[in-house]
Length: 88
Image 1 (tube, rainbow, N blue to C red):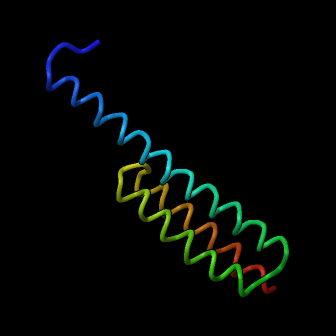
Image 2 (image 1 turned 90 degrees about the horizontal axis):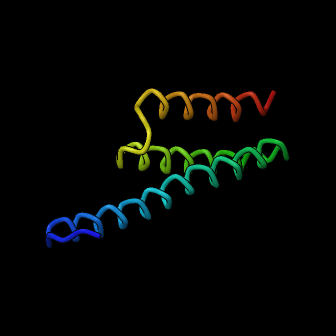
């Protein structure tokens, strides 16, 4: 257990940030899964909406430092490619 007041606060802050990290990573994963389902169902209209939402969630996770820039770009590029190929 922490003795100093500052270290007690640091523990609280790190716990709070860890919860927020879980929220943002879950958003990315869940929106990606929803997009994949829309792609499998060949629902182009819904897929385009979900793609926009998923890209926003990925950008937010990157902004919070939860993923690296290359990972962000790779995920977005692969999802966009899947949606574009869906119509063919």
